[in-house]
Image (cartoon, rainbow, N blue to C red; front, side):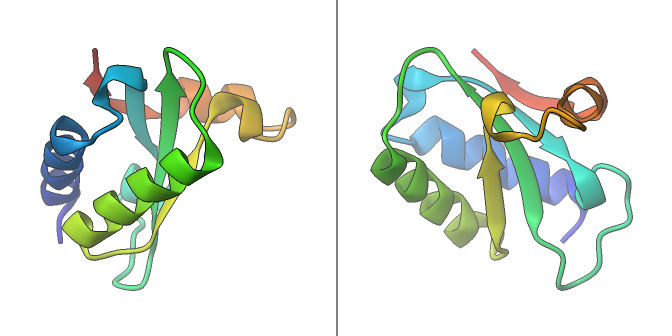
Length: 99
């Protein structure tokens, strides 16, 4: 699956998500951003929420996106990133959805 196909499938997942009202931004980073992805690469997404979301909601959102892109997905929030590389990830991430 190409980077554009991944991005389009993620957008569709987000639009159908029961958590859509909480999602502020979704950005792609790491291997799919840099075109270094292999067939077995996971999809790394940086997700920002307008308001709190439970771990169960986050896991549900991850499951739905994984089903749509047919790949393992890692959902991370800015606060869950290590302070040692948080700014780099945020600055390099490619925005694919914003409300």
